[in-house]
Length: 353
Image (cartoon, rainbow, N blue to C red; front, top):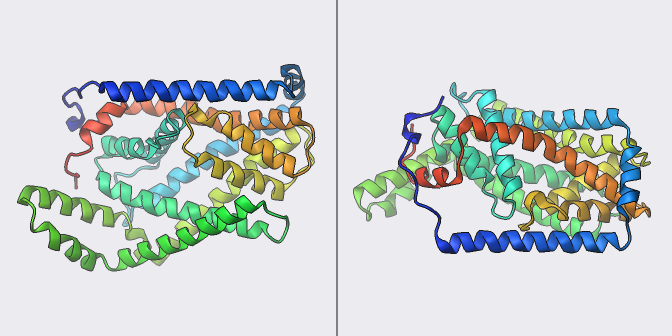
């Protein structure tokens, strides 16, 4: 359902500086993309890419698309489990559309990472669940994702020589994830103490502002409540493992589609390097060029000398990743009537119960 409060007043038009920043970012993205195409065209012809893609097997591609969609559904289910005790308003369908909207926005505006705010907005609009509580669950979710990525890199170490940048980044991510997870675990079990500590400096503020900030803090801490339940925590860890496995299956299935002689270890390496590349704040929409460069780099490290075939695989992999996000994300944007200006305009409102 669409909450009445979101039929709000129109938000003010964007400022001149914001419009200028958007145009400069778009021009920079186009320039980088054009340079990348020119650079590749010196070594690879579009005819070579066309021949490689024309010979691709359709069945593995369709199966990879299905796996990619199931991965997004599994992420939505995990997000639903993060609301503990069970939140009746948090349906799997509502979680799925909110997740897809977030992915869609992050794809369109990849350098700002606005998708998480859009996702919280969509969930609040459809269910009335507190935005700050939803943000608290996202903090826990991102910590689980970091732990999964770090464990993937750790499991790869006995089988391959991991590039230095990946090993270093993996060690850093693992340390941050473990420290963050420990901190969140302590916060979840010391909620009353944290609330008292937060409330003490708020007493110096005006009553209305202090009350709002305190309610936001309480709602945010509610997002960590799943950590207090061993059963819920076990489900979260298991679902994260399933999501990690599904994420490896997508690049794995595309290897035989183009006749590449690689297996699960190589798929894990491709997944890790694209995940790291996707976290970079690049100005190109959908990380065009950056994603392909990361895949080609890893395939080159694995001994694939045919650059046209490597680029064809990178393009195919990127299309398989993007297609469900675009289709379901655009549908989610239409269902929720999402607009970024509406999100920004409603964000300061007090959280709902």
